Length: 137
Image 1: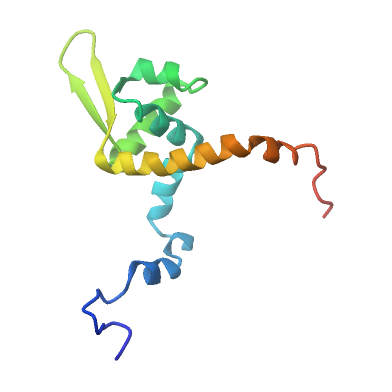
Image 2: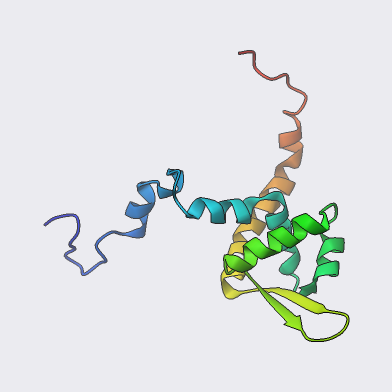
């Protein structure tokens, strides 16, 4: 039996087998852009902020302290284009735009939340290494 067929009627290549190929490690892999968008500083913080529900742009800007309008706008555009968040614009004056997680975004935010929680829980252990001098080359 070759690798592409399966006795139990399984798909030709299991997900774990495809993951082992390391496509994410390839320069031209489009998943790298998604990884960049989801794990950028602002991408992570926007996903976490939207876990609390729908927010307007100005609400997100206040909630994600330190982000510029330009970076927030760019991050939102990336996450909308990746299908992680939905942008809903209302035809009113002044303009009213809301952002909310899509089902895909809910899944991504949950995983990002796990990493953020791990970082916060382990910050004292991580901080112990901040005073160490970098190794000499």
